Image (tube, rainbow, N blue to C red; front, side, top):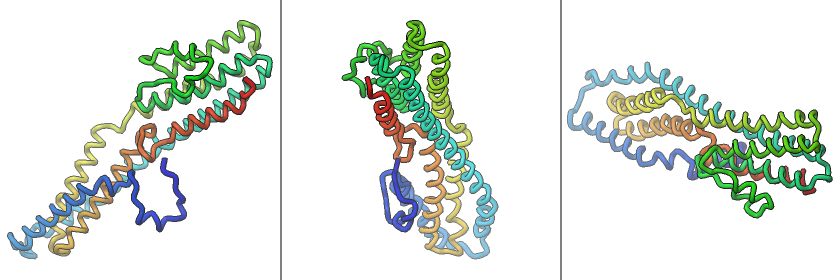
Length: 297
Protein backbone atom coordinates (compact mmCIF):
# COMPACT_ATOMS: atom_id res chain seq x y z
CA UNK A 1 0.00 0.00 0.00
CA UNK A 2 1.23 3.49 -0.87
CA UNK A 3 1.90 5.60 2.23
CA UNK A 4 1.41 9.33 1.89
CA UNK A 5 0.52 12.53 3.72
CA UNK A 6 -2.94 13.64 2.52
CA UNK A 7 -2.25 17.23 3.61
CA UNK A 8 0.52 17.69 1.04
CA UNK A 9 -1.85 17.58 -1.89
CA UNK A 10 0.01 20.17 -4.00
CA UNK A 11 2.90 17.71 -4.41
CA UNK A 12 0.55 15.06 -5.82
CA UNK A 13 0.11 17.09 -9.00
CA UNK A 14 3.74 16.60 -10.00
CA UNK A 15 4.31 13.16 -8.43
CA UNK A 16 4.18 10.00 -10.51
CA UNK A 17 4.56 6.46 -9.24
CA UNK A 18 4.16 3.03 -10.77
CA UNK A 19 0.49 2.83 -9.75
CA UNK A 20 -0.37 6.20 -11.30
CA UNK A 21 -2.99 5.89 -14.00
CA UNK A 22 -1.29 8.52 -16.19
CA UNK A 23 1.70 6.22 -16.67
CA UNK A 24 -0.50 3.31 -17.69
CA UNK A 25 -2.74 5.36 -19.94
CA UNK A 26 -0.04 7.38 -21.72
CA UNK A 27 -0.02 5.24 -24.93
CA UNK A 28 -3.82 5.35 -25.14
CA UNK A 29 -3.91 9.08 -24.41
CA UNK A 30 -1.47 9.70 -27.26
CA UNK A 31 -3.56 7.48 -29.51
CA UNK A 32 -6.76 9.37 -28.63
CA UNK A 33 -4.95 12.68 -29.23
CA UNK A 34 -3.81 11.49 -32.67
CA UNK A 35 -7.33 10.28 -33.47
CA UNK A 36 -8.82 13.63 -32.40
CA UNK A 37 -6.27 15.47 -34.54
CA UNK A 38 -7.20 13.34 -37.54
CA UNK A 39 -10.92 14.03 -37.10
CA UNK A 40 -10.24 17.74 -36.68
CA UNK A 41 -8.17 17.79 -39.88
CA UNK A 42 -10.79 15.90 -41.88
CA UNK A 43 -13.67 18.09 -40.75
CA UNK A 44 -11.91 21.45 -40.97
CA UNK A 45 -9.51 21.01 -43.88
CA UNK A 46 -10.55 18.04 -46.01
CA UNK A 47 -14.34 17.83 -45.79
CA UNK A 48 -14.66 21.52 -44.86
CA UNK A 49 -17.98 21.02 -43.10
CA UNK A 50 -20.05 24.14 -42.59
CA UNK A 51 -21.44 25.47 -39.35
CA UNK A 52 -24.87 24.28 -40.53
CA UNK A 53 -23.81 20.64 -40.69
CA UNK A 54 -25.79 18.18 -38.64
CA UNK A 55 -22.49 16.95 -37.18
CA UNK A 56 -22.40 20.12 -35.12
CA UNK A 57 -25.37 18.79 -33.08
CA UNK A 58 -23.52 15.73 -31.81
CA UNK A 59 -22.49 17.45 -28.52
CA UNK A 60 -26.17 17.42 -27.54
CA UNK A 61 -25.86 13.63 -27.28
CA UNK A 62 -22.82 13.94 -25.05
CA UNK A 63 -24.68 16.37 -22.81
CA UNK A 64 -27.52 13.89 -22.40
CA UNK A 65 -25.22 10.92 -21.79
CA UNK A 66 -22.77 12.76 -19.51
CA UNK A 67 -25.00 12.34 -16.46
CA UNK A 68 -25.48 8.63 -17.19
CA UNK A 69 -21.77 7.90 -17.55
CA UNK A 70 -20.95 9.88 -14.41
CA UNK A 71 -23.51 7.91 -12.38
CA UNK A 72 -22.18 4.61 -13.71
CA UNK A 73 -18.59 5.51 -12.81
CA UNK A 74 -19.59 6.72 -9.33
CA UNK A 75 -21.39 3.45 -8.67
CA UNK A 76 -18.43 1.51 -10.10
CA UNK A 77 -15.83 3.20 -7.89
CA UNK A 78 -18.03 3.06 -4.77
CA UNK A 79 -18.63 -0.65 -5.25
CA UNK A 80 -14.91 -1.29 -5.73
CA UNK A 81 -14.01 0.77 -2.64
CA UNK A 82 -16.58 -1.09 -0.54
CA UNK A 83 -14.84 -4.35 -1.47
CA UNK A 84 -11.42 -2.89 -0.60
CA UNK A 85 -12.62 -1.52 2.74
CA UNK A 86 -14.34 -4.79 3.67
CA UNK A 87 -11.10 -6.64 2.94
CA UNK A 88 -9.18 -4.24 5.18
CA UNK A 89 -11.71 -4.68 8.00
CA UNK A 90 -11.47 -8.45 7.72
CA UNK A 91 -7.70 -8.36 8.11
CA UNK A 92 -8.06 -5.94 10.99
CA UNK A 93 -10.32 -8.51 12.65
CA UNK A 94 -7.71 -11.20 12.00
CA UNK A 95 -5.11 -9.08 13.82
CA UNK A 96 -7.39 -8.56 16.82
CA UNK A 97 -8.54 -12.18 17.01
CA UNK A 98 -4.97 -13.49 16.71
CA UNK A 99 -3.91 -11.30 19.63
CA UNK A 100 -6.98 -12.25 21.65
CA UNK A 101 -6.33 -15.94 21.12
CA UNK A 102 -2.69 -15.50 22.11
CA UNK A 103 -3.68 -13.54 25.25
CA UNK A 104 -6.20 -16.19 26.28
CA UNK A 105 -3.70 -18.99 25.73
CA UNK A 106 -1.05 -17.06 27.65
CA UNK A 107 -3.44 -16.77 30.60
CA UNK A 108 -4.77 -20.33 30.47
CA UNK A 109 -1.50 -22.15 29.84
CA UNK A 110 0.71 -19.97 32.02
CA UNK A 111 4.38 -20.92 32.11
CA UNK A 112 3.75 -24.57 32.92
CA UNK A 113 3.22 -25.72 29.32
CA UNK A 114 6.16 -24.38 27.25
CA UNK A 115 5.59 -26.93 24.46
CA UNK A 116 1.98 -25.89 23.97
CA UNK A 117 2.89 -22.19 24.09
CA UNK A 118 5.56 -22.77 21.47
CA UNK A 119 3.07 -24.58 19.22
CA UNK A 120 0.58 -21.71 19.18
CA UNK A 121 3.36 -19.14 19.00
CA UNK A 122 4.14 -20.72 15.63
CA UNK A 123 0.69 -21.69 14.38
CA UNK A 124 -1.25 -18.46 14.93
CA UNK A 125 1.09 -16.33 12.74
CA UNK A 126 1.33 -19.22 10.29
CA UNK A 127 -2.40 -18.96 9.63
CA UNK A 128 -2.10 -15.29 8.67
CA UNK A 129 0.91 -16.03 6.46
CA UNK A 130 -0.74 -18.87 4.52
CA UNK A 131 -3.99 -16.89 4.18
CA UNK A 132 -1.99 -14.03 2.62
CA UNK A 133 -0.48 -16.40 0.03
CA UNK A 134 -3.78 -18.23 -0.47
CA UNK A 135 -5.54 -14.97 -1.41
CA UNK A 136 -2.69 -14.01 -3.72
CA UNK A 137 -3.32 -17.28 -5.57
CA UNK A 138 0.30 -18.20 -5.00
CA UNK A 139 1.56 -21.70 -4.31
CA UNK A 140 1.28 -21.61 -0.54
CA UNK A 141 4.41 -22.53 1.38
CA UNK A 142 5.13 -22.12 5.07
CA UNK A 143 8.32 -20.10 4.68
CA UNK A 144 8.42 -18.00 7.83
CA UNK A 145 8.90 -20.88 10.17
CA UNK A 146 11.28 -23.25 8.40
CA UNK A 147 13.61 -23.14 11.41
CA UNK A 148 10.83 -23.87 13.89
CA UNK A 149 10.93 -26.96 16.08
CA UNK A 150 7.39 -27.62 14.81
CA UNK A 151 8.66 -27.97 11.25
CA UNK A 152 7.71 -31.66 11.26
CA UNK A 153 4.09 -30.69 11.91
CA UNK A 154 4.08 -28.03 9.20
CA UNK A 155 5.51 -30.51 6.71
CA UNK A 156 2.35 -32.61 7.04
CA UNK A 157 0.38 -29.87 5.26
CA UNK A 158 -0.72 -30.78 1.73
CA UNK A 159 -0.03 -27.69 -0.37
CA UNK A 160 -2.35 -28.88 -3.11
CA UNK A 161 -5.35 -28.56 -0.79
CA UNK A 162 -6.83 -25.64 1.16
CA UNK A 163 -3.83 -24.68 3.32
CA UNK A 164 -5.54 -22.19 5.71
CA UNK A 165 -8.12 -24.85 6.61
CA UNK A 166 -5.36 -27.35 7.36
CA UNK A 167 -3.55 -24.91 9.65
CA UNK A 168 -6.83 -24.11 11.45
CA UNK A 169 -7.49 -27.84 11.78
CA UNK A 170 -4.08 -28.36 13.43
CA UNK A 171 -4.93 -25.69 16.02
CA UNK A 172 -8.38 -27.18 16.64
CA UNK A 173 -6.90 -30.64 17.15
CA UNK A 174 -4.21 -29.36 19.47
CA UNK A 175 -6.69 -27.51 21.67
CA UNK A 176 -8.97 -30.55 21.71
CA UNK A 177 -6.03 -32.68 22.79
CA UNK A 178 -5.34 -30.23 25.62
CA UNK A 179 -8.92 -30.82 26.76
CA UNK A 180 -8.58 -34.62 26.46
CA UNK A 181 -5.36 -34.49 28.48
CA UNK A 182 -7.21 -32.36 31.08
CA UNK A 183 -4.78 -29.49 30.67
CA UNK A 184 -7.74 -27.17 30.04
CA UNK A 185 -11.35 -27.40 31.20
CA UNK A 186 -14.50 -27.55 29.11
CA UNK A 187 -15.24 -23.92 29.92
CA UNK A 188 -11.78 -22.91 28.72
CA UNK A 189 -12.31 -24.95 25.55
CA UNK A 190 -15.44 -22.91 24.78
CA UNK A 191 -13.59 -19.76 25.82
CA UNK A 192 -11.05 -20.35 23.04
CA UNK A 193 -13.53 -21.45 20.39
CA UNK A 194 -14.69 -17.98 19.30
CA UNK A 195 -11.27 -16.86 18.04
CA UNK A 196 -10.57 -20.19 16.36
CA UNK A 197 -13.89 -20.08 14.56
CA UNK A 198 -13.29 -16.47 13.50
CA UNK A 199 -10.20 -17.50 11.53
CA UNK A 200 -12.27 -19.65 9.20
CA UNK A 201 -15.03 -17.03 9.03
CA UNK A 202 -12.50 -14.38 7.97
CA UNK A 203 -10.97 -16.71 5.39
CA UNK A 204 -14.39 -17.45 3.90
CA UNK A 205 -15.31 -13.77 3.74
CA UNK A 206 -12.01 -12.94 2.01
CA UNK A 207 -12.57 -15.75 -0.49
CA UNK A 208 -16.05 -14.38 -1.20
CA UNK A 209 -14.53 -11.03 -2.18
CA UNK A 210 -11.70 -12.68 -4.12
CA UNK A 211 -13.87 -15.10 -6.07
CA UNK A 212 -16.83 -12.83 -6.81
CA UNK A 213 -15.75 -10.11 -9.25
CA UNK A 214 -17.96 -7.33 -10.54
CA UNK A 215 -20.41 -8.89 -13.05
CA UNK A 216 -18.79 -9.26 -16.48
CA UNK A 217 -21.63 -7.64 -18.43
CA UNK A 218 -21.52 -4.56 -16.19
CA UNK A 219 -17.77 -4.10 -16.58
CA UNK A 220 -17.87 -4.62 -20.35
CA UNK A 221 -20.75 -2.16 -20.74
CA UNK A 222 -18.87 0.62 -18.91
CA UNK A 223 -15.78 0.12 -21.07
CA UNK A 224 -17.82 0.16 -24.27
CA UNK A 225 -19.72 3.22 -23.08
CA UNK A 226 -16.49 5.13 -22.37
CA UNK A 227 -15.01 4.06 -25.72
CA UNK A 228 -18.02 5.19 -27.78
CA UNK A 229 -18.37 8.40 -25.77
CA UNK A 230 -14.73 9.36 -26.36
CA UNK A 231 -14.58 8.30 -30.02
CA UNK A 232 -17.60 10.45 -30.91
CA UNK A 233 -16.48 13.42 -28.83
CA UNK A 234 -14.22 15.13 -31.44
CA UNK A 235 -16.85 15.17 -34.22
CA UNK A 236 -19.11 17.84 -32.75
CA UNK A 237 -16.69 19.83 -30.62
CA UNK A 238 -14.34 20.54 -33.54
CA UNK A 239 -16.66 23.36 -34.64
CA UNK A 240 -16.35 25.22 -31.34
CA UNK A 241 -12.82 24.24 -30.28
CA UNK A 242 -10.98 23.74 -33.54
CA UNK A 243 -7.67 21.95 -33.03
CA UNK A 244 -7.95 22.57 -29.30
CA UNK A 245 -10.25 19.56 -29.37
CA UNK A 246 -7.10 17.40 -29.26
CA UNK A 247 -6.02 18.17 -25.64
CA UNK A 248 -9.65 18.46 -24.48
CA UNK A 249 -10.65 14.99 -25.69
CA UNK A 250 -7.39 13.50 -24.41
CA UNK A 251 -8.02 14.98 -20.97
CA UNK A 252 -11.65 13.77 -20.87
CA UNK A 253 -10.45 10.28 -21.80
CA UNK A 254 -7.79 10.42 -19.06
CA UNK A 255 -10.40 11.29 -16.41
CA UNK A 256 -12.98 8.67 -17.42
CA UNK A 257 -10.48 5.86 -18.05
CA UNK A 258 -8.62 6.62 -14.80
CA UNK A 259 -11.78 6.20 -12.75
CA UNK A 260 -12.39 2.82 -14.38
CA UNK A 261 -8.76 1.74 -13.84
CA UNK A 262 -8.82 2.76 -10.18
CA UNK A 263 -11.96 0.71 -9.66
CA UNK A 264 -10.34 -2.28 -11.41
CA UNK A 265 -7.29 -2.04 -9.15
CA UNK A 266 -9.05 -1.87 -5.79
CA UNK A 267 -11.94 -4.25 -6.49
CA UNK A 268 -9.53 -7.12 -5.68
CA UNK A 269 -8.01 -5.92 -2.39
CA UNK A 270 -5.78 -8.99 -1.99
CA UNK A 271 -3.72 -8.72 -5.17
CA UNK A 272 -0.20 -7.41 -5.51
CA UNK A 273 -1.06 -3.89 -6.66
CA UNK A 274 0.42 -0.87 -4.88
CA UNK A 275 -2.94 0.21 -3.42
CA UNK A 276 -4.15 -3.21 -2.28
CA UNK A 277 -4.52 -4.23 1.36
CA UNK A 278 -0.98 -4.86 2.71
CA UNK A 279 -1.69 -8.41 3.85
CA UNK A 280 1.99 -9.35 3.98
CA UNK A 281 2.83 -6.50 6.37
CA UNK A 282 -0.23 -7.30 8.47
CA UNK A 283 0.90 -10.94 8.67
CA UNK A 284 4.29 -9.79 9.94
CA UNK A 285 2.60 -7.59 12.56
CA UNK A 286 0.54 -10.57 13.71
CA UNK A 287 3.72 -12.64 14.02
CA UNK A 288 5.43 -9.94 16.07
CA UNK A 289 2.42 -9.44 18.34
CA UNK A 290 1.84 -13.14 19.01
CA UNK A 291 5.54 -13.75 19.69
CA UNK A 292 5.58 -10.89 22.18
CA UNK A 293 2.59 -12.36 24.03
CA UNK A 294 3.71 -16.01 24.00
CA UNK A 295 7.41 -15.29 24.48
CA UNK A 296 7.66 -17.73 27.34
CA UNK A 297 7.95 -20.72 25.02
